[in-house]
Image (cartoon, rainbow, N blue to C red):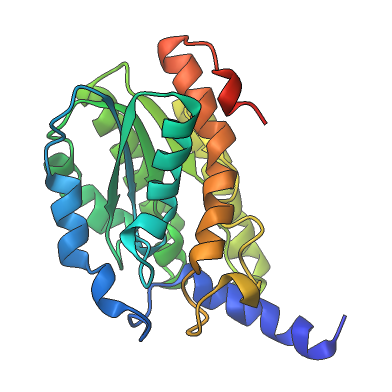
Length: 242
């Protein structure tokens, strides 16, 4: 491998997980304001709701709303014949603490499936893992208190190795440990195949491109299908199978 590639990969990975300044490319397409508007709006049709709760990775900062992975999952569900509405509740800069503080407002709707994607900003800011763990567990239990039948998915994240092996290892292990303890479906690593790949990240080196979001949607898809089948015991339509 080219030495420069070895040097820059962990740096790109570090930046990718962060929520830095909004990129110059299409900054007006996906702001925090319009993200909260989407998340707080009431769905008017009678389809079940899949709510994705996260930071700028979910909000799709720097790409059009229809190109972010939640919207791509909506298209995949529609093509497969599932009657679900995906609500993007991503907010740039969110930590587990800020996510916890806004969760009650988000849970105004009857949610069939809840995807929790938070924690990367905690790690990059050096927040004690005990706090992150407590907040993630609290959010999972809050969703369950709202509706015990809601299927919950937890999106795992990882940190760059230059933050130290002990901290990064504990951070990585935190997600499967919580998933097992709280009996939720684990997406092992949301950025699998995207982190560190300059071809799948915007010019700022922070946020995934449209192609990067396509990879993220494909990563989430099999775990979302599992949640659907477990929550409703519905057979998987032929169109949804690989």
